[in-house]
Image (cartoon, rainbow, N blue to C red; front, side):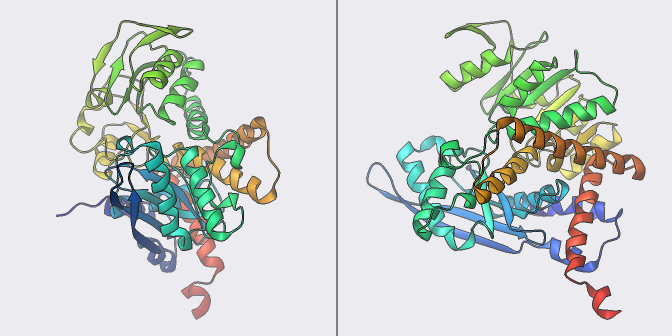
Length: 427
Ligand code: GLU
């Protein structure tokens, strides 16, 4: 049977439906994406040739507001993947009580093969192709895997050219000088940090000497590693797409980040100024990292990393999903039986879209907040929703993932009810 990520994502919905009373109207709406757009993007390459790339934008559900979600540039991007990611965004925005539905976009490329000029032409070409599908009150793109503020700036600029008016609120995650929000770049990691800290406290585990392994050293994993290390967690392993490093006594994360920025690779180093020296470490694969004997495992790269194949060998008692969809639903069952707790993506990585919401609000009001204001509002919101989801999981005796879906479903149901359901019309 052909296995799709979207049907796997739908299994989470089915499980949560056992614990909520929800109208058939809401269930029917949530089964299918509202609209999926597939586009071909012609790009003039630096060598003069013309190449055409495949792009997608999916608006999954807009019951709670304009749709929201990132755009990824990755060789594995497909319609199925983008639909699944848009599905997760729908639940993520509802779980955090953001006035948004869910969307996602992507282009099937390896951005590392592109020059800066080519990336700019591609980003602008993508917006040319999807301009009628997005808008500040319709659908708002943002960064995701291998896209960054500069790319968001080009996209906003292109949309403004098409509409003949500066429209900052059409895209979030922009450079600060183009209407971006302070704190947006670190928001995913910051949100994850608040969630981890809040839940570890509830579980009676203090940070000192809790060991952590992080898969992925990008905008989310790299910044989170630094925040955790600063708060006395012992980060013993990190990796990027090329592989990972492990040191039992803990890694010096600021030095590794500095090295990664200058060399694009990761090595266990200690840097003083610009001089970095290699320190003792073991080189490991990404697969080995996932199976390390640590307290906290943080997949912060791509989806489908922990599957039924490796789930029986996972040793960490706590998994925090900073990537979207890193644990499959089959793996979920195995981990649950083994007493391993998984804290779900739609809560753990929701800091990014939360500060995207703040950016959209700032763009629309034209008044910009201080970094402190952004971070404290993020903390307030994400800790509040973490507490609610935790209470729900305790009251109903269900996993944090199912509780997060139940919590989001309740909000989606309220919005569906407000428009009238079968019960309203037929009574
Ligand atoms: N791509 C991020 C996510 O998966 C952020 C989306 C946004 O800011 O709209 O949550």
